[in-house]
Image (cartoon, rainbow, N blue to C red):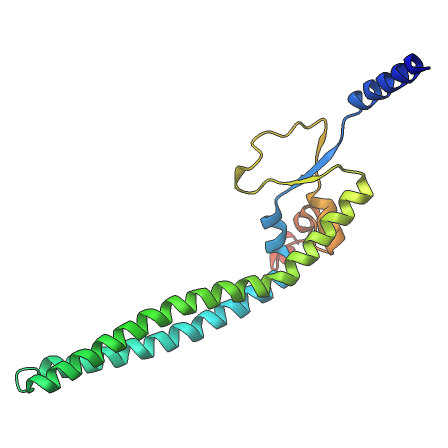
Length: 186
């Protein structure tokens, strides 16, 4: 009986070893950049960056104005006023640097928050495509992470994911004439 169980287990492993798992691959960034959520998040992020830049510019202009005043009057200032103005300039400069650093952190967090919905939607589409097609996994080919993919077991799922997201496929884009192009062909 043990021998029969061993033989059955052995055959089961042999059969499983011969069955290859198919997988999909896609450029996550390429599809993400085609999504309307990405375009909206990019616009919102650009507006936020502009606001932070404008505020930082105000601080720099104030520093420059006070620095020019300091340079023009430094010969006439008593020592106590000189030290007060130098301390004030140092504080303005430190505040400006701190604001730039803090704004970079806030922008990075805002970008993460703004892109969260697009990432969730794309991840959901990848999951659905993977389950529907029976793939063991879907690889992200961005940044040359997969320099070689065996075409026998790996399948490019870009078009399937685009369809799942309701995005125009490459063949539809090629077939659709560009504005003004239809008139030229007549």
